[in-house]
Image 1 (cartoon, rainbow, N blue to C red):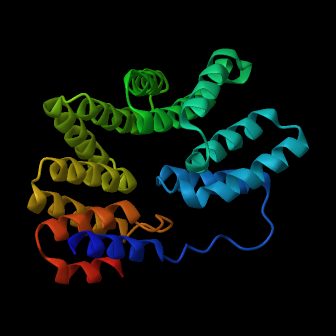
Image 2: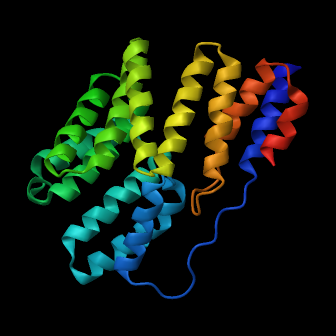
Length: 252
């Protein structure tokens, strides 16, 4: 019975209204800027069309650099449709052999972030190496945002390795830095990550508190997208806490 209720509640989360995209003609630069704005909010799903449209326009204009930028974003936005190992291998080859990714550090950082996200789905040493490379390049570029964002991802890698102390420390430190810098999207991501970690440790009340805080912050962020992961985690916590009566309110 519980499993059936769990399945039905999770299905409700899928029925969400996507945010409206800007209307009217847009230039390739505007499309790419909007896609990168959404990606910075971790809203890759909604960024996909703008990445694809801007790539097409950049290619037509012969702008190889920005076409590659857009293609990398499109890969990340459509990763659920791709073979993860094959895509990770493709990006490794690009990083090693593409002259643009050798000379353009901003573009290289973006490619490493995309590859890091993909390897995070696979797990293992490659994930940790990706985010160590992101950290090093972010330091070189004095990009503080991606220094602490990468720190959190390295915390997740430590969690996968069973090093719970390092995982908690990294993500908590990253959360403090994101809060200090007003990076609300990262705050939501890190709070959710901590909530998921606590849930895995069967600390459902604490997990619920972190995820509810994440949901509250997410509701203040324009273009954040539908918070599926947060809500699904909250529903799972409520089920395990035998608070099923509260679950329908969350999925609205």
